[in-house]
Image 1 (cartoon, rainbow, N blue to C red):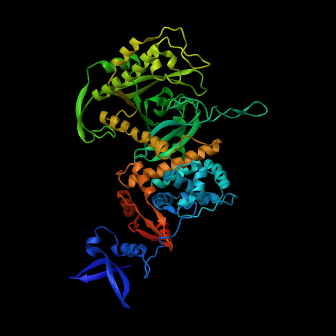
Image 2 (image 1 turned 90 degrees about the vertical axis):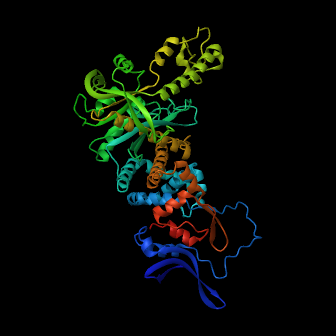
Image 3 (image 1 turned 30 degrees about the horizontal axis):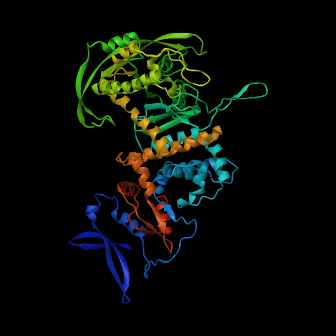
Length: 593
């Protein structure tokens, strides 16, 4: 097949043409009409170069045609299915120069196996067919690459991946900024945890003198799924475009509240950022975090950063509660609802709110962590009311209260682990320490006073910020961006199956989450390149399904095509329309442009 240029009426017309022989004579057949050159120049920078390349990639069927032995039998254990959808993942992988990063690190190591080859296999597999490291190795033949290393090499390499984790994160940040421009002052931060299906927490390690060498990593702590298993925790920092910036892993029994400041300090130092405005949920809204980010502490060691936090009205002080319930000052604006997940995107909604600049007194520890220091900071406080939120809170509470009433009537049915949420509404409840069962002989009753107090604040939500010049709407819009980091955790847990984790060594666990982080970053870049028209699930399903089966004579047959495949054709300037491709043509597609 070749590109033909025909001239007519003073204009050049392009088409794909296939040459063939008939009765000993060379003839031509038009395969596809492309259009006039001057029209195509409005779409392509150089249409002739583009379509010449496409023509070379198109399948050329031998003159005698492709013959298939329809009586051929399958061999035992045959698996001729192979994936080409990973070409999109590989293009982003190479665009981020991850291959170059490992090639440079490899020169400093005395190892025979190829770090980049191992890391790329684990990332491709995690993105498309998430599984254990062993299964990724065993099924590496699904990709059109040669992965010449052993399973032992895979496990050995995990130590190196863990060692380079922070360096890779810095490298990825610099590479992403070459492609995606965002407000890098705004950073969304949150913490989640991942469980291990093991019965006991890791023990602390001590040397012969009794000095602590290493804390136990997998520890029982507050689990998001309320499971009793040991966990580790991940702190994730994301930019305003939803692109992951950095992550860290810490012990399961460590408070998530203490993880924020080390992450901010590291990112500011390593990424050479002058200032970060941290957007976080109310769980991280502590005095120490607030004072630190506001630039107030006892030794002036911190520069001025900023924060936008959620604020619990129910958990606020008496002054804040009284201000919230005071009807004076509230205004109602009509705005367009662009909140993701609201179900009303693009529709006008009412926004009832009020705000104030408030001198807030906070208490924090000094540099030695002993006595408390009182500091005054000025922050803007916003409270708003939503009837929809009030209805949801009431409905959620009624569901928990139904469980609480059943606990009172049938305490033998419940334990400490199964009574989560409802136990807080039951007066006099106690649990047997050894068994976790509800103690017998106790007069259980519903805490009506607590219920009445909570009902006062149904529908109210508050946000506080160091950015006193932010409008009420800017505060709300900025804070609403947290949904993307919540979705990022969901992607890692559901699409990339990051849990449960079947690794024991701390370095190996850290390497596992680095692989998940890189897969997430590639996913977010692909979403950005396609204007977020496709969900992570749609992207992963599409690329996993763009696979082929081997035919005779070195040909592969493809049977899937959708809108996302069409999109990556345009993004990466590749042709994925052919039903039949040879191995050499597939390798050309997988090469960098």
